[in-house]
Image 1 (tube, protein in one colour):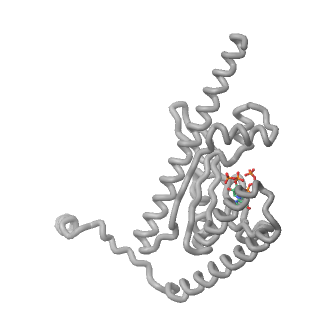
Image 2 (cartoon, rainbow, N blue to C red):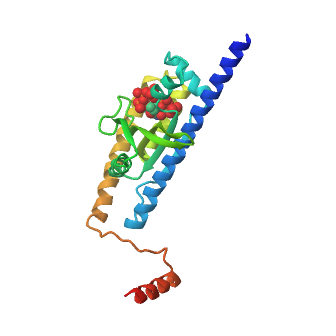
Length: 236
Ligand code: 0O2
């Protein structure tokens, strides 16, 4: 390897590690946003629309494999634009309505730009896969100013997530060549999961519809409440 080649390899390595770092930052930002939504919902409605959040940044190896599979050039700007799941966040909710609600709350934020929404709940994949996918662009505030970074957010119910993780394992086990009988059973299981989702949602709305918002303000304990009262008396 010539000194120039070594130098350009070093530069490429630095570019890639910077790219991955920016995607770690976007995950951190998104996790903060999602936690805020979750806590605020709990505070305002004593209701948590988000059951679970997980996240990952693609490993360097898996990123390079995808770049290679897609036949992309080793150019950071191209990779940044074309590989939209370097940063991935998965949100699981109890109910279908919550998945749309969480998506709406996130995409309504001023600093988030929606690149693409794929609604596999309204239009499931032929194998039965259901999930909401949002490709979002979020500014990450670095020393030199904001840098827009793309992340993929998958939002789905617990039942959809259960199905997807089983399907993923089966797919992996058979190296993509899943026997027809299992494909059929998976499709049936996806329908059963969907029916369960809809029944649970119906039960839930029967119990909760019309219930008033409860904001208990519990974080103000008795002592804080007494100080608040004294201050308000002084002001009044
Ligand atoms: P991994 O290992 O989960 O990251 P792209 O992802 O950009 O190449 P595509 O397929 O159009 O293109 O994107 P799509 O449909 O939004 O799917 C992206 C991700 O959704 C996948 O990432 C999976 O995580 C998930 N997904 C999509 N379809 C299925 C499915 O049929 N079964 C399961 N279990 N998951 C699915 P990756 O990169 O394929 O995998």
